[in-house]
Image (cartoon, rainbow, N blue to C red; front, side):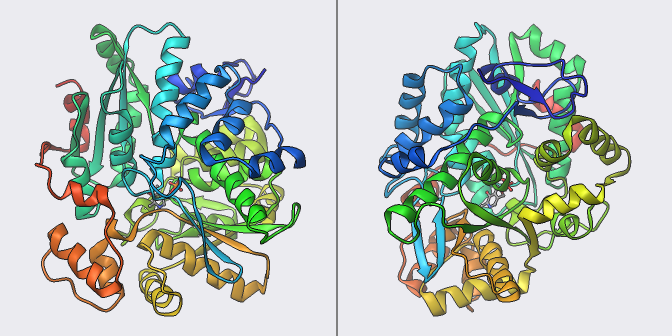
Length: 493
Ligand SMILES: *Cc1c(COP(=O)(O)O)cnc(C)c1O
Protein backbone atom coordinates (compact mmCIF):
# COMPACT_ATOMS: atom_id res chain seq x y z
CA UNK A 1 0.00 0.00 0.00
CA UNK A 2 1.34 3.40 -1.01
CA UNK A 3 1.02 6.29 1.40
CA UNK A 4 1.84 9.93 0.84
CA UNK A 5 3.84 12.12 3.19
CA UNK A 6 4.74 15.81 3.32
CA UNK A 7 8.23 17.02 2.35
CA UNK A 8 8.28 19.15 5.54
CA UNK A 9 6.85 16.71 8.05
CA UNK A 10 9.69 16.19 10.54
CA UNK A 11 7.64 13.89 12.78
CA UNK A 12 6.32 11.70 9.98
CA UNK A 13 2.86 12.25 11.49
CA UNK A 14 0.93 12.65 8.25
CA UNK A 15 0.22 9.65 6.03
CA UNK A 16 -2.57 9.75 3.47
CA UNK A 17 -3.60 7.90 0.32
CA UNK A 18 -3.03 9.28 -3.15
CA UNK A 19 -6.67 10.29 -3.73
CA UNK A 20 -6.50 12.47 -0.62
CA UNK A 21 -3.16 13.95 -1.69
CA UNK A 22 -4.53 14.82 -5.13
CA UNK A 23 -7.63 16.36 -3.59
CA UNK A 24 -5.61 18.47 -1.12
CA UNK A 25 -2.86 19.53 -3.53
CA UNK A 26 -0.64 20.98 -0.81
CA UNK A 27 0.13 19.49 2.62
CA UNK A 28 -1.20 21.40 5.69
CA UNK A 29 2.36 22.27 6.78
CA UNK A 30 3.00 23.95 3.41
CA UNK A 31 5.04 21.01 2.13
CA UNK A 32 4.46 18.97 -1.02
CA UNK A 33 3.12 15.45 -1.07
CA UNK A 34 5.50 12.63 -1.94
CA UNK A 35 4.99 8.88 -2.09
CA UNK A 36 6.66 7.32 0.94
CA UNK A 37 8.79 5.15 -1.36
CA UNK A 38 9.50 4.97 -5.09
CA UNK A 39 8.19 1.79 -6.75
CA UNK A 40 10.47 0.03 -9.22
CA UNK A 41 10.19 -1.15 -12.81
CA UNK A 42 11.91 -4.43 -13.61
CA UNK A 43 13.58 -5.28 -16.92
CA UNK A 44 10.70 -7.63 -17.64
CA UNK A 45 8.14 -4.88 -16.99
CA UNK A 46 9.96 -2.44 -19.24
CA UNK A 47 9.99 -5.09 -21.97
CA UNK A 48 6.23 -5.47 -21.56
CA UNK A 49 5.70 -1.72 -21.60
CA UNK A 50 7.71 -1.49 -24.82
CA UNK A 51 4.98 -3.51 -26.55
CA UNK A 52 2.20 -1.19 -25.38
CA UNK A 53 0.63 2.02 -26.64
CA UNK A 54 1.02 5.20 -24.58
CA UNK A 55 -2.53 4.95 -23.25
CA UNK A 56 -1.65 1.50 -21.84
CA UNK A 57 1.77 2.47 -20.54
CA UNK A 58 0.25 5.31 -18.50
CA UNK A 59 -2.11 3.30 -16.24
CA UNK A 60 0.54 0.58 -15.80
CA UNK A 61 2.93 3.11 -14.29
CA UNK A 62 0.30 5.24 -12.54
CA UNK A 63 -1.18 2.24 -10.73
CA UNK A 64 2.14 1.74 -8.94
CA UNK A 65 1.78 5.19 -7.39
CA UNK A 66 -2.01 5.51 -7.18
CA UNK A 67 -2.79 2.08 -5.78
CA UNK A 68 -5.98 3.25 -4.06
CA UNK A 69 -7.56 3.80 -7.50
CA UNK A 70 -9.20 0.85 -9.24
CA UNK A 71 -6.75 -0.18 -12.03
CA UNK A 72 -9.61 -0.50 -14.54
CA UNK A 73 -10.76 3.02 -13.74
CA UNK A 74 -7.21 4.31 -14.24
CA UNK A 75 -7.05 2.48 -17.56
CA UNK A 76 -10.33 4.15 -18.58
CA UNK A 77 -9.04 7.61 -17.64
CA UNK A 78 -5.87 7.08 -19.67
CA UNK A 79 -7.77 5.79 -22.65
CA UNK A 80 -9.88 8.96 -22.75
CA UNK A 81 -7.05 11.35 -21.88
CA UNK A 82 -4.51 10.09 -24.43
CA UNK A 83 -6.89 9.15 -27.24
CA UNK A 84 -5.97 9.62 -30.90
CA UNK A 85 -8.66 12.31 -31.03
CA UNK A 86 -6.97 14.37 -28.29
CA UNK A 87 -3.41 13.59 -29.34
CA UNK A 88 -3.41 13.08 -33.09
CA UNK A 89 -0.23 11.25 -34.07
CA UNK A 90 0.44 9.88 -30.57
CA UNK A 91 0.86 11.34 -27.09
CA UNK A 92 4.65 11.44 -26.80
CA UNK A 93 6.35 10.62 -30.12
CA UNK A 94 10.14 10.50 -30.26
CA UNK A 95 11.65 12.17 -33.32
CA UNK A 96 15.27 11.58 -34.36
CA UNK A 97 16.66 15.03 -35.16
CA UNK A 98 20.09 13.68 -35.99
CA UNK A 99 22.08 10.59 -35.06
CA UNK A 100 21.95 10.14 -31.28
CA UNK A 101 19.83 13.27 -30.73
CA UNK A 102 16.10 12.86 -30.18
CA UNK A 103 13.22 15.21 -29.61
CA UNK A 104 10.54 13.90 -27.26
CA UNK A 105 7.57 15.86 -28.60
CA UNK A 106 5.09 16.49 -25.80
CA UNK A 107 2.96 19.04 -27.63
CA UNK A 108 0.56 17.03 -29.73
CA UNK A 109 -2.36 17.60 -27.32
CA UNK A 110 -5.31 20.00 -27.38
CA UNK A 111 -3.36 23.11 -26.27
CA UNK A 112 -0.13 22.31 -28.12
CA UNK A 113 2.10 22.37 -25.01
CA UNK A 114 3.41 19.65 -22.72
CA UNK A 115 1.14 20.60 -19.83
CA UNK A 116 -1.58 18.64 -21.66
CA UNK A 117 0.30 15.43 -20.85
CA UNK A 118 -0.68 15.85 -17.20
CA UNK A 119 -3.73 18.06 -17.46
CA UNK A 120 -5.76 15.82 -19.70
CA UNK A 121 -5.71 13.07 -17.07
CA UNK A 122 -5.37 15.03 -13.80
CA UNK A 123 -8.99 16.35 -13.79
CA UNK A 124 -10.15 12.74 -14.10
CA UNK A 125 -7.90 11.75 -11.20
CA UNK A 126 -9.32 14.60 -9.14
CA UNK A 127 -12.92 13.84 -10.05
CA UNK A 128 -12.27 10.21 -9.06
CA UNK A 129 -10.65 11.36 -5.80
CA UNK A 130 -13.72 13.44 -4.91
CA UNK A 131 -15.93 10.39 -5.34
CA UNK A 132 -13.54 8.08 -3.48
CA UNK A 133 -13.35 10.44 -0.49
CA UNK A 134 -17.13 11.04 -0.38
CA UNK A 135 -16.72 14.74 -1.13
CA UNK A 136 -19.94 16.69 -1.69
CA UNK A 137 -18.50 20.19 -1.98
CA UNK A 138 -17.35 21.65 -5.29
CA UNK A 139 -13.57 21.73 -5.77
CA UNK A 140 -12.49 25.23 -6.78
CA UNK A 141 -9.21 24.95 -8.66
CA UNK A 142 -7.00 28.04 -8.42
CA UNK A 143 -4.17 28.24 -10.93
CA UNK A 144 -1.32 30.70 -11.31
CA UNK A 145 0.17 30.26 -14.74
CA UNK A 146 3.26 31.45 -16.53
CA UNK A 147 1.42 30.73 -19.76
CA UNK A 148 0.83 27.16 -20.74
CA UNK A 149 -0.53 25.63 -17.53
CA UNK A 150 -3.49 27.98 -17.53
CA UNK A 151 -4.79 27.01 -20.91
CA UNK A 152 -4.06 23.33 -20.41
CA UNK A 153 -5.86 23.36 -17.05
CA UNK A 154 -8.85 25.25 -18.46
CA UNK A 155 -9.12 22.77 -21.30
CA UNK A 156 -8.68 19.79 -18.97
CA UNK A 157 -11.19 20.95 -16.34
CA UNK A 158 -13.81 22.59 -18.54
CA UNK A 159 -17.25 21.24 -17.74
CA UNK A 160 -15.85 18.53 -15.44
CA UNK A 161 -18.50 17.77 -12.83
CA UNK A 162 -17.95 18.93 -9.27
CA UNK A 163 -15.16 21.32 -10.24
CA UNK A 164 -14.74 25.05 -10.92
CA UNK A 165 -11.56 26.64 -12.15
CA UNK A 166 -10.08 30.15 -11.90
CA UNK A 167 -6.85 30.96 -13.72
CA UNK A 168 -4.56 33.94 -13.03
CA UNK A 169 -1.85 34.92 -15.50
CA UNK A 170 0.76 37.74 -15.37
CA UNK A 171 -0.60 40.54 -17.55
CA UNK A 172 2.55 41.18 -19.54
CA UNK A 173 4.26 37.86 -18.94
CA UNK A 174 2.62 35.61 -21.52
CA UNK A 175 2.70 35.54 -25.30
CA UNK A 176 -0.16 37.01 -27.35
CA UNK A 177 -1.17 33.52 -28.43
CA UNK A 178 -1.08 32.17 -24.86
CA UNK A 179 -3.26 35.06 -23.73
CA UNK A 180 -5.74 34.55 -26.55
CA UNK A 181 -5.94 30.83 -25.80
CA UNK A 182 -6.99 31.62 -22.23
CA UNK A 183 -9.26 34.61 -22.78
CA UNK A 184 -11.30 32.72 -25.39
CA UNK A 185 -11.71 29.61 -23.22
CA UNK A 186 -15.05 27.85 -23.55
CA UNK A 187 -16.91 26.12 -20.71
CA UNK A 188 -19.41 27.04 -17.98
CA UNK A 189 -17.18 26.46 -14.94
CA UNK A 190 -14.16 28.56 -15.97
CA UNK A 191 -12.88 32.10 -15.16
CA UNK A 192 -9.71 33.81 -16.28
CA UNK A 193 -8.09 36.96 -14.88
CA UNK A 194 -4.90 38.92 -15.58
CA UNK A 195 -2.66 39.99 -12.66
CA UNK A 196 -0.65 43.22 -12.78
CA UNK A 197 2.69 41.64 -11.91
CA UNK A 198 4.89 38.73 -12.89
CA UNK A 199 4.35 34.99 -12.52
CA UNK A 200 5.77 34.88 -9.01
CA UNK A 201 3.30 37.59 -7.93
CA UNK A 202 0.43 35.52 -9.30
CA UNK A 203 1.74 32.32 -7.70
CA UNK A 204 2.31 34.03 -4.36
CA UNK A 205 -1.25 35.36 -4.50
CA UNK A 206 -2.68 31.91 -5.12
CA UNK A 207 -0.57 30.40 -2.35
CA UNK A 208 -1.78 33.12 0.02
CA UNK A 209 -5.43 32.31 -0.72
CA UNK A 210 -4.69 28.61 -0.18
CA UNK A 211 -3.19 29.22 3.25
CA UNK A 212 -5.66 31.90 4.42
CA UNK A 213 -8.13 30.43 6.97
CA UNK A 214 -10.58 33.26 6.27
CA UNK A 215 -10.63 32.43 2.56
CA UNK A 216 -11.16 28.77 3.42
CA UNK A 217 -14.13 29.71 5.62
CA UNK A 218 -15.67 31.86 2.90
CA UNK A 219 -15.25 29.02 0.42
CA UNK A 220 -16.87 26.63 2.88
CA UNK A 221 -19.91 28.94 3.15
CA UNK A 222 -20.38 28.49 -0.58
CA UNK A 223 -20.01 24.71 -0.36
CA UNK A 224 -16.66 24.82 -2.12
CA UNK A 225 -13.06 24.19 -1.16
CA UNK A 226 -9.81 25.25 -2.81
CA UNK A 227 -7.56 22.87 -4.66
CA UNK A 228 -4.63 23.30 -7.01
CA UNK A 229 -3.76 22.07 -10.45
CA UNK A 230 -0.25 23.57 -10.43
CA UNK A 231 2.66 21.23 -10.83
CA UNK A 232 2.94 21.04 -7.04
CA UNK A 233 -0.09 18.69 -7.10
CA UNK A 234 0.97 15.05 -7.17
CA UNK A 235 -1.81 14.41 -9.70
CA UNK A 236 0.13 16.62 -12.10
CA UNK A 237 3.48 15.09 -11.40
CA UNK A 238 2.68 11.39 -11.55
CA UNK A 239 1.42 11.40 -15.18
CA UNK A 240 4.65 13.11 -16.23
CA UNK A 241 6.74 10.14 -15.10
CA UNK A 242 5.16 8.11 -17.88
CA UNK A 243 6.72 9.80 -20.90
CA UNK A 244 10.25 9.25 -19.65
CA UNK A 245 9.55 5.53 -19.39
CA UNK A 246 7.76 5.71 -22.73
CA UNK A 247 10.72 7.39 -24.46
CA UNK A 248 13.07 4.67 -23.22
CA UNK A 249 10.64 2.01 -24.45
CA UNK A 250 10.43 3.69 -27.86
CA UNK A 251 14.23 3.75 -28.16
CA UNK A 252 14.24 0.01 -27.36
CA UNK A 253 11.51 -0.71 -29.89
CA UNK A 254 13.32 1.30 -32.56
CA UNK A 255 16.48 -0.75 -31.91
CA UNK A 256 18.41 2.43 -31.08
CA UNK A 257 19.49 0.96 -27.71
CA UNK A 258 19.48 -2.36 -25.86
CA UNK A 259 17.95 -2.73 -22.41
CA UNK A 260 20.33 -1.29 -19.83
CA UNK A 261 22.01 1.13 -22.23
CA UNK A 262 22.06 4.58 -20.66
CA UNK A 263 20.45 7.67 -22.15
CA UNK A 264 20.75 11.31 -21.15
CA UNK A 265 17.82 13.69 -21.01
CA UNK A 266 17.69 17.47 -21.34
CA UNK A 267 14.63 19.20 -19.91
CA UNK A 268 13.66 22.86 -20.39
CA UNK A 269 12.95 23.75 -16.79
CA UNK A 270 10.95 26.32 -14.87
CA UNK A 271 9.14 24.97 -11.84
CA UNK A 272 11.30 21.79 -11.82
CA UNK A 273 8.18 19.61 -12.22
CA UNK A 274 8.92 18.06 -15.58
CA UNK A 275 12.55 17.25 -14.81
CA UNK A 276 11.68 15.92 -11.36
CA UNK A 277 9.21 13.48 -12.93
CA UNK A 278 12.14 12.28 -15.06
CA UNK A 279 14.21 11.86 -11.91
CA UNK A 280 11.47 9.64 -10.45
CA UNK A 281 11.50 7.53 -13.64
CA UNK A 282 15.25 7.15 -13.13
CA UNK A 283 14.74 6.11 -9.52
CA UNK A 284 12.19 3.54 -10.69
CA UNK A 285 14.95 1.94 -12.72
CA UNK A 286 14.83 3.54 -16.16
CA UNK A 287 18.51 3.72 -17.23
CA UNK A 288 18.79 7.48 -17.47
CA UNK A 289 22.36 8.50 -16.73
CA UNK A 290 22.20 12.26 -16.47
CA UNK A 291 19.75 15.14 -16.70
CA UNK A 292 20.70 18.44 -18.21
CA UNK A 293 18.59 21.03 -16.41
CA UNK A 294 18.10 23.72 -19.06
CA UNK A 295 17.20 27.26 -17.99
CA UNK A 296 16.73 30.49 -19.92
CA UNK A 297 18.21 33.79 -18.69
CA UNK A 298 16.41 33.22 -15.37
CA UNK A 299 19.19 30.86 -14.34
CA UNK A 300 18.38 30.39 -10.68
CA UNK A 301 18.62 26.59 -11.06
CA UNK A 302 21.83 26.73 -13.09
CA UNK A 303 23.44 28.72 -10.29
CA UNK A 304 22.02 26.38 -7.65
CA UNK A 305 23.50 23.32 -9.34
CA UNK A 306 26.81 25.16 -9.74
CA UNK A 307 27.12 26.56 -6.20
CA UNK A 308 24.60 24.91 -3.86
CA UNK A 309 23.07 28.33 -3.19
CA UNK A 310 19.48 28.89 -4.23
CA UNK A 311 18.93 32.61 -4.38
CA UNK A 312 15.84 34.19 -5.79
CA UNK A 313 17.00 37.72 -4.97
CA UNK A 314 18.02 38.61 -8.47
CA UNK A 315 16.88 40.40 -11.57
CA UNK A 316 13.89 38.83 -13.26
CA UNK A 317 14.04 38.57 -17.05
CA UNK A 318 11.14 38.35 -19.44
CA UNK A 319 12.18 36.02 -22.19
CA UNK A 320 10.85 34.40 -25.34
CA UNK A 321 10.27 31.26 -23.23
CA UNK A 322 7.80 32.72 -20.69
CA UNK A 323 6.78 29.38 -19.21
CA UNK A 324 10.31 29.16 -17.82
CA UNK A 325 10.43 32.72 -16.46
CA UNK A 326 10.38 31.55 -12.87
CA UNK A 327 12.49 32.40 -9.84
CA UNK A 328 10.85 30.00 -7.39
CA UNK A 329 11.11 26.46 -8.69
CA UNK A 330 8.62 24.88 -6.31
CA UNK A 331 9.23 21.27 -7.21
CA UNK A 332 12.91 21.48 -6.31
CA UNK A 333 11.60 20.99 -2.78
CA UNK A 334 10.76 17.40 -3.71
CA UNK A 335 14.33 16.71 -4.80
CA UNK A 336 15.68 18.23 -1.58
CA UNK A 337 13.31 15.97 0.35
CA UNK A 338 14.43 12.83 -1.50
CA UNK A 339 18.11 13.66 -0.98
CA UNK A 340 18.03 15.42 2.40
CA UNK A 341 14.87 14.31 4.23
CA UNK A 342 12.05 16.39 5.77
CA UNK A 343 14.06 18.02 8.56
CA UNK A 344 16.57 19.61 6.18
CA UNK A 345 13.88 20.46 3.64
CA UNK A 346 11.74 22.27 6.20
CA UNK A 347 14.82 24.30 7.14
CA UNK A 348 15.66 25.25 3.54
CA UNK A 349 12.08 26.29 2.88
CA UNK A 350 11.96 28.38 6.06
CA UNK A 351 15.15 30.15 4.90
CA UNK A 352 13.67 30.64 1.44
CA UNK A 353 10.56 32.28 2.76
CA UNK A 354 12.46 34.44 5.29
CA UNK A 355 15.38 35.55 3.10
CA UNK A 356 14.65 34.36 -0.44
CA UNK A 357 17.71 32.13 -0.25
CA UNK A 358 19.10 28.90 1.15
CA UNK A 359 22.30 26.93 0.88
CA UNK A 360 22.56 23.16 0.85
CA UNK A 361 25.48 21.32 2.47
CA UNK A 362 28.29 20.01 0.31
CA UNK A 363 27.31 16.32 0.43
CA UNK A 364 23.77 17.14 -0.71
CA UNK A 365 25.10 19.32 -3.52
CA UNK A 366 27.42 16.48 -4.58
CA UNK A 367 24.40 14.18 -4.87
CA UNK A 368 22.53 16.74 -6.94
CA UNK A 369 25.51 17.15 -9.23
CA UNK A 370 25.98 13.41 -9.65
CA UNK A 371 22.70 13.35 -11.61
CA UNK A 372 21.99 16.92 -12.77
CA UNK A 373 24.05 19.28 -14.91
CA UNK A 374 22.83 22.87 -14.95
CA UNK A 375 23.04 24.87 -18.16
CA UNK A 376 21.39 28.05 -19.31
CA UNK A 377 20.78 29.53 -22.73
CA UNK A 378 20.37 33.29 -23.11
CA UNK A 379 18.06 34.89 -25.67
CA UNK A 380 20.68 35.24 -28.40
CA UNK A 381 21.75 31.61 -28.10
CA UNK A 382 18.12 30.43 -28.03
CA UNK A 383 17.25 32.29 -31.21
CA UNK A 384 20.43 31.02 -32.87
CA UNK A 385 19.50 27.46 -31.87
CA UNK A 386 16.06 27.76 -33.52
CA UNK A 387 17.76 28.92 -36.70
CA UNK A 388 20.53 26.30 -36.65
CA UNK A 389 18.15 23.42 -36.05
CA UNK A 390 15.98 24.54 -38.91
CA UNK A 391 18.85 25.25 -41.32
CA UNK A 392 20.86 22.12 -40.53
CA UNK A 393 18.22 19.57 -39.62
CA UNK A 394 15.03 20.97 -41.11
CA UNK A 395 13.58 20.78 -37.59
CA UNK A 396 11.41 23.62 -36.35
CA UNK A 397 11.19 24.12 -32.59
CA UNK A 398 9.68 26.65 -30.18
CA UNK A 399 11.77 28.89 -27.88
CA UNK A 400 11.33 26.67 -24.78
CA UNK A 401 12.51 23.59 -26.62
CA UNK A 402 15.28 25.67 -28.19
CA UNK A 403 16.61 26.54 -24.72
CA UNK A 404 16.88 22.79 -24.15
CA UNK A 405 18.48 22.04 -27.51
CA UNK A 406 21.01 24.81 -26.96
CA UNK A 407 21.91 23.51 -23.49
CA UNK A 408 22.07 19.92 -24.75
CA UNK A 409 24.46 20.90 -27.51
CA UNK A 410 26.75 22.76 -25.14
CA UNK A 411 26.68 19.87 -22.65
CA UNK A 412 27.68 17.43 -25.40
CA UNK A 413 30.44 19.72 -26.69
CA UNK A 414 31.88 20.39 -23.24
CA UNK A 415 31.77 16.84 -21.91
CA UNK A 416 32.17 14.80 -25.13
CA UNK A 417 29.54 12.50 -23.63
CA UNK A 418 28.38 10.28 -26.53
CA UNK A 419 25.36 8.81 -24.69
CA UNK A 420 22.16 9.17 -26.76
CA UNK A 421 20.46 12.44 -25.81
CA UNK A 422 16.72 12.87 -25.53
CA UNK A 423 15.68 16.52 -25.55
CA UNK A 424 12.26 17.16 -24.09
CA UNK A 425 10.36 19.38 -26.49
CA UNK A 426 7.57 21.21 -24.71
CA UNK A 427 5.60 23.41 -27.10
CA UNK A 428 4.55 23.58 -30.71
CA UNK A 429 6.47 26.38 -32.52
CA UNK A 430 3.16 27.87 -33.68
CA UNK A 431 2.41 28.83 -30.06
CA UNK A 432 5.23 31.39 -30.36
CA UNK A 433 5.13 32.32 -34.04
CA UNK A 434 6.46 35.89 -33.74
CA UNK A 435 9.65 34.89 -31.93
CA UNK A 436 10.19 31.84 -34.13
CA UNK A 437 9.89 34.07 -37.21
CA UNK A 438 12.40 36.53 -35.73
CA UNK A 439 14.78 33.69 -34.97
CA UNK A 440 14.58 32.66 -38.62
CA UNK A 441 15.47 36.19 -39.67
CA UNK A 442 12.04 37.49 -40.61
CA UNK A 443 10.52 40.48 -38.80
CA UNK A 444 6.81 39.64 -38.38
CA UNK A 445 4.39 41.96 -40.15
CA UNK A 446 1.18 42.29 -38.16
CA UNK A 447 0.48 40.47 -34.93
CA UNK A 448 -2.75 38.64 -35.64
CA UNK A 449 -2.55 34.85 -35.48
CA UNK A 450 -3.59 34.69 -39.13
CA UNK A 451 -0.74 36.90 -40.29
CA UNK A 452 1.84 35.15 -38.11
CA UNK A 453 0.70 31.63 -38.98
CA UNK A 454 0.70 32.48 -42.69
CA UNK A 455 4.21 33.93 -42.54
CA UNK A 456 5.68 31.05 -40.54
CA UNK A 457 3.96 28.48 -42.67
CA UNK A 458 5.16 29.89 -45.98
CA UNK A 459 8.69 30.43 -44.66
CA UNK A 460 9.10 26.91 -43.31
CA UNK A 461 6.68 24.75 -45.28
CA UNK A 462 5.08 23.54 -42.01
CA UNK A 463 1.41 23.77 -41.07
CA UNK A 464 -0.19 25.32 -37.96
CA UNK A 465 -1.89 22.83 -35.62
CA UNK A 466 -5.69 22.68 -35.78
CA UNK A 467 -6.43 23.73 -32.16
CA UNK A 468 -4.49 26.99 -32.60
CA UNK A 469 -6.22 27.75 -35.89
CA UNK A 470 -9.51 27.36 -34.09
CA UNK A 471 -8.50 29.68 -31.20
CA UNK A 472 -7.97 32.47 -33.70
CA UNK A 473 -11.67 32.29 -34.64
CA UNK A 474 -13.16 32.40 -31.09
CA UNK A 475 -14.51 35.54 -29.34
CA UNK A 476 -12.67 36.90 -26.25
CA UNK A 477 -14.72 36.12 -23.11
CA UNK A 478 -12.45 37.31 -20.28
CA UNK A 479 -10.99 40.80 -19.92
CA UNK A 480 -10.57 41.25 -16.12
CA UNK A 481 -7.27 42.47 -14.72
CA UNK A 482 -6.43 42.92 -11.01
CA UNK A 483 -3.56 43.96 -8.73
CA UNK A 484 -2.02 41.00 -6.85
CA UNK A 485 -3.87 42.01 -3.64
CA UNK A 486 -7.15 41.99 -5.59
CA UNK A 487 -6.96 38.30 -6.43
CA UNK A 488 -9.04 37.21 -3.42
CA UNK A 489 -11.83 39.59 -4.41
CA UNK A 490 -11.85 38.15 -7.92
CA UNK A 491 -12.09 34.61 -6.59
CA UNK A 492 -15.09 35.49 -4.39
CA UNK A 493 -16.75 37.90 -6.79
C1 LIG B 1 5.71 24.59 -18.08
C2 LIG B 1 6.62 24.59 -19.23
C3 LIG B 1 8.00 24.36 -19.08
C4 LIG B 1 8.65 24.16 -17.72
O1 LIG B 1 8.24 22.98 -17.07
P1 LIG B 1 8.40 22.85 -15.47
O2 LIG B 1 7.70 21.61 -15.11
O3 LIG B 1 7.77 24.07 -14.90
O4 LIG B 1 9.86 22.82 -15.20
C5 LIG B 1 8.78 24.32 -20.21
N1 LIG B 1 8.25 24.53 -21.44
C6 LIG B 1 6.94 24.78 -21.62
C7 LIG B 1 6.43 25.03 -22.99
C8 LIG B 1 6.09 24.81 -20.54
O5 LIG B 1 4.79 25.06 -20.73
